[in-house]
Amino acid sequence: MTAKQPTQADFILYEHPLNEQVRTYLRLESLFNHHYQLIQSESHTNHIGVLHNILEILDCLDRGDIKGDLLKELEQQKLHFQQLAENPYIDELKLKTFLSQLQQVYQWISQYPGKFGSRLRKDRFIELINNRIRIPGGSCSFDLPELHQFINKPLEVKQAQFKEWFGHFSGLHESIKILLRLFRENATFQTVNTQQGHYQYNFEKGKSAHLLRIKLHSTDLAFPEVSGSKHCFNIRFLIPQTDDIVASTEEQQFLLAIC
Image 1: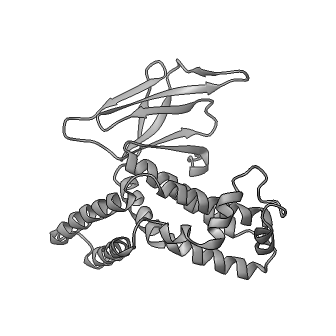
Image 2: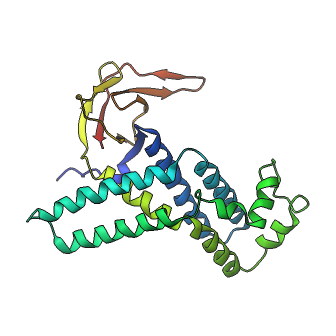
Image 3: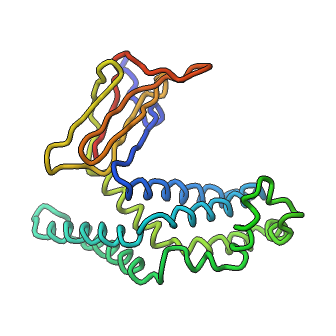
């Protein structure tokens, strides 16, 4: 009888950014994913969650020059894949399709007027709820009667409005999906071991990475804590206990991808 092969469900995946740009991309990816999960529901509570989520996206977009960083990264990716056109082993049709996709999101971002989300912030309804909904319990009907009216509208009306609001982020969403997919596909998982609960890695001179991906078996008691920069990173494993969290000193085997 053959042993059962492990599946994705047997592991917990942890990701850690190694620069501020990827940190922001991961946060936005998480918020975008939450958006699509929440709008699938017919629950009024989840639809209020959609609005909270939109405000969190706007808050996230307030940090740094995301637009400039994305344009720079997309331009570098375009140049890289254009050079691959000379490789006889590359599928020319797939490459052209992907380059066209890159160009479309690049144009969307470059033509976006001002800062991401700036037009949505000026939406009267978004501005209204932004001023009140962050108060604990601020979504009550006596605090925001207009929100209460909106939440009780037919599902198709609300979903159409959610789609219109999220349209302000559509090209941003696509560009982040593309870049994170490219980063993640840039490395494969390798089995590594800690020494007394720690794992340290120093990059060779002139080399760096965007992202760490760590897989632990779902039955493992420990979880990883990562500190890192463009020069090196350190992973230690912690074990939650009833009253505290303790550092593991045992050898820990895990899967690691340096993207």
